[in-house]
Each structure stands twice: as structure tokens, then as C-alpha cells.
Length: 369
Image 1 (cartoon, rainbow, N blue to C red):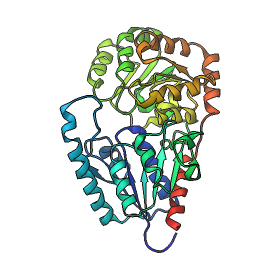
Image 2 (cartoon, rainbow, N blue to C red; image 1 turned 90 degrees about the horizontal axis):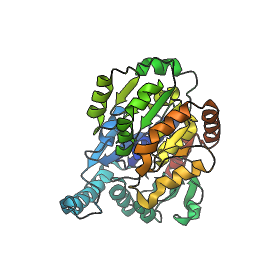
Image 3 (cartoon, rainbow, N blue to C red; image 1 turned 180 degrees about the vertical axis):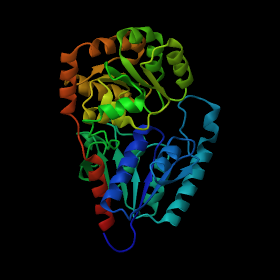
């Protein structure tokens, strides 16, 4: 591409399910045109303020916060922060002057996307879930394009704006073959037994962590090697448990930056059933035990998990039964090679690669307009 430098603003974040797709999209934009200026706008105190700069991009934080559904003093400042974020969003757009704004969902997506619409800046929305969020449903009528990961999204969005792309996944996840030795070295594993990866997402999952705390001896006795992403809250407790047990085959992390290597060595994965996690598991082709979060709109994580279970591509454990069943199911699965191979084969057929590149191409189409 020639002429003046193209400017793309990407807004949203809050969790890895929003942040990592956004970074993947930015990487694909740079692959198409390395001279494109990319600016992120996120929420202060959220993970994007750390992860985006680590990926090599600039980011500005807004004071916007989530609205608590229960009565709490935390809501007192919600509307003030929202108003301040809307004012700052307009100032950012005036200063940066983007050709296109991309909304990936999360706290910061709403104020920036609304400001873009008011200034007639083309807006592209990326919706990760099979159940569309409220903000994206409101913005849909103003968006030029809506990139989705699931069929049937015309029940939420205008059909003529929808592009079925799948979800962007982190770099390297689509190319795991031949990386086991690298992964063994990275995580300091012995590499001679089955490996279980347990992750509750970027923020951790209390029920998954508790199930491992309560059934740690079963894991230790099984000879399974464990890579455990706990999130910040349970990290110190998990580290103390692992180091005090004398078991050398447990690798504890608050957060895993190179998740592609964790997938590369894992024989099975315990995880939530968020849209991006499910997409990554499909691309990686990993047998999965999914524990849907009960704290999401319309119970959409259960819908995500069931879409795999119905194709014999994953195992689902309800959140309230995780402490009782999860670890035992994982140990049993890792002891059954036929079942592991069947789940791996079936989930691999559901993987959709190239989503980030396709979304980036849609962004450049809007620039050309």
C-alpha cells in the first residue's frame, strides 16, 4: 500500500479472550502493511495495559470499569468513569485520526466505538462468542462490518454486515508439531510421562484451582506432569503446595506467556469454555475437559462446550461438580490412549485457522473505501 500512513485503532480488552485476538489482528495488519500505525485503547488496571506493550504496540488506558449487577458502592463511580472515558475517547480519535476503528469487546470497546460512530469513522466489530454481547448488539447497526466466529449470528446482527471468520488465536498455536523438546526445556519437565495443562484463562478459575488443591495427591500418585496456570489470586497458594509436596512434576504459573509451547506438550487440557479458549483448543487439536463458567451472560460457555461434546470432541464437567469429578476424569482420560486420540481427532476437525488475517483484510477493505 502506498500514500500516507494508514492508521488503525483497536479498542477493548479486560480478559485474554478480548486481548489476545486483538493482538493477533494487529499482527496480521502489520504482516499486510508493516507501515500501518496501530494504537490500542484499553481499560486502566486491566491486563491489556501490560500485554499489549509486551507485544510491541502502544496503548492508552481509559478509566472505564464494569457495572456490578448487584448493589454495591463500586457502582457509585461507574457513570463518572464512563463519562470521563467517552470524553477521552473523543480526544484520542481527534488526535490519532484513525482510518478504521476495530472493537473487540470488553470495557473500553463501547466508549471508543460510540465516539467513532459519532465522528463517521468506519467501525468493524469482532464478536468472539456464539451469544453476542450487549455492547456489540447496540453498535451493530452502526458498524460497517461484523466479523463473527459462529454460524447463525444473523439473529443478533444484520446479515449483510456479517463475515464468518472464526476467532483469531495466538501466534504459534496452529503450528505445534516438532516442538515437544522445546516445551520440555521451557517448562523444566521430565518429559517421560503424560502432561496435563490446567488453565482457568488469563485471570484464573477458582473452581478449577480448588479441584486441583483438593485432589493434588491423585495427580501426584498418577505420575502425570502438570502445567498449572492459576491466575494471580491462587498463585502463591499453588506454588506453596507444589514446592512443599516434593513432587517435581508440577509447574505453577500465575500466567503463561508462551501458551503455544504449553499446548505443544500437553496431552490433555483442563480449561474454561470461553470462545477464544475453545477456538485455540480446536486449532491445537487437544483433548479437553471443559468447565464452563457459571458467571457469564446466557450461560454461553455451556453452549460453547456442548457444541464440542455433541461431536465427541471434548468432555464437559459442570462447575459445581468440578471439585468432585474433574481431576479423576482427567487422570482417567490420560490413561486411555484410544479416547485421547479420538477426542484429538474430532476436535481438530473443528479448528478454523487464518481468522486474524481475514479480519485484517476486511479492515483494509474499509480503508480503501
